[in-house]
Length: 452
Image (cartoon, rainbow, N blue to C red):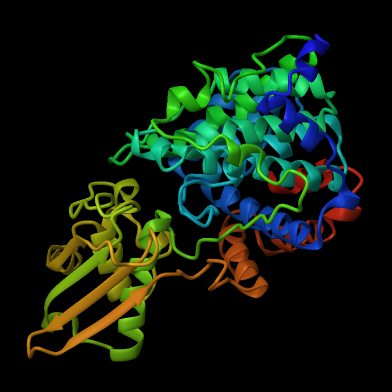
């Protein structure tokens, strides 16, 4: 099977690149980024595990049975690594507070962290080995998104699972210490199982499901390759490969650009419990609320200009479930104006029919403005009944690289999510283990504390 390792395909170049990853070669910035995301991921997954979608995913993983290898976050049992990866990915995507890339196209952690932690626990990996896998998986995922988007998204494919399965595969392959030719095969099988559609913005749990198969399939692809199953080395650039099948326009060079240089991994975090491109709109509303304290009963009209990249998304003014509300820009602006925040508590089925929220949602007109500088940029103009106007434009939302959440803010978010489920003492233990994960001999010590 070594002929694949000499083919110089994109998959082979990536396998060689990630095969050189080791803890000592990770930059301090990368170590810090993946550790910050580890804390954030665990907090979000613990909270998400208690939602209806998280509970169903945990039940499914439990009833399938099998070896007791990996922890179900927020649950009380251990299941095969593939099933833990599946359920934990769904849990971590169930409260819309998971991380985001700089273009708001995908979430790193549900596929990459879920597969990595499940596998790390299975093979008794160290904290340093985990950090290496996380860094590699995130880089793989982002490289593919850069090569495939925005065509991938515009064709109706969800980037988190379609690109995430490759990140999950690379991370798992490193933890399983696969040789280069088997990593190539694993990437081929990842492409064979890549899936996920943007037909998910409705009242159902559909969006929550998408990263589950990606995390599980990443573990499957790497494990099968390790057992000797071979996959297509031309999975990226082939005539019927991933880029040809999932995009109308792609840039394959992005997959292997500057492999000899340090990779800058930019991970952004969410302070609000909704789709990331809505966060700019929420920040606009909160800024006007903070600066002008407008009498909401005297608002005559509101106009939200959005960049064309996202202008046709998130337009629902009458969400029927909190799942729909979390992808509704009008509802999110309305609740931010009334409550001064947009946390998971604000996205509650009991709030959806409140007359004031419905009135404010109806006042908001959304249009496209190509002059805005970024794909997620928002410009809110609020007009009062006396003609006074309040204006706010947000190009970089809270939690972005340019407007970051501090370590203290991330810890506060983590505590707010974990305390109600596991208690303050357990939350403190998890946070301490994450902080010292570089010195951890067995990642299982961390994961066991995330169970009930």
